[in-house]
Length: 335
Image (cartoon, rainbow, N blue to C red; front, side, top):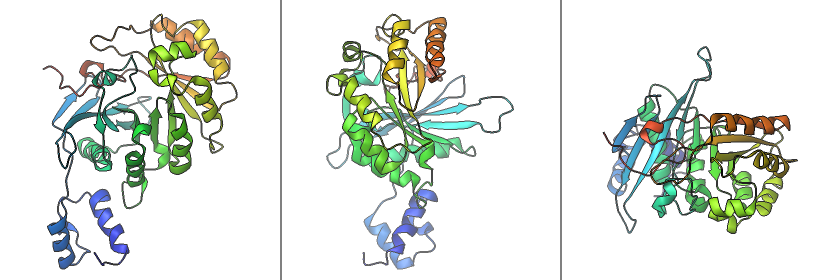
């Protein structure tokens, strides 16, 4: 537009950090420039079509994305998750779990989103728009963490996800430290090292199995990126000294929760700087799996800890509104 380069930072700060609704609000721009922007651009906002509230304080946001410019209509979900570690803890967290795709094409058998198949990739504005909507809904409470653990495989939509991460972390954007952003992947090995090198965010790898036949059955992506190659890519990551990789492990009764599975997991992760997030299976209609009993989960955790691996249990949040891990299916809950 023939304007000085610093105008870009000013405009972007208004769009993202100050969350302007109209160009007229951009008071440090000339009237002529504001008029030109208003003539050529729109300030679109992503608004939730429905918000479901869980008994535990979790809130699920359903968004309808209209069809436009050859892009298919779609529906996606985000989840606001409050977490109070202790009643006297001043460091309470509010995490926003966001989606990177509408649906998912990875086919993990224990995930409701996989049943949708891949509808389409999300654009950067649709990814960032979930954060903007989450901030507005949470106000005056501030978001403390962003996790790409909603619908879709982030590394299968790498370009838009990277652009969204830049907007979220930039000073002219949302100024969220990469240390407070986690991207979860089913293990697209070639993109894992690229993500760490180019963004500096935290990495979470969904593992959920300890042998290739087992993972082939539960997570078909393993046929393209088997365990050995995935773990080799993780070992070669240029991790900063104090950073660890999180491995997520969904526990399915009688499928992957035996003592032998825990011991194989110890061997697989030997030598890596890791923490393991054990996730009790969250049921959904027609899943065909059952959650591991609590005693079995604790036994699995104890085996990992006995071998020096930090292992935490992710307590399910929002099950009553189908907002827990693996339950997102872009469907409005029944009243």
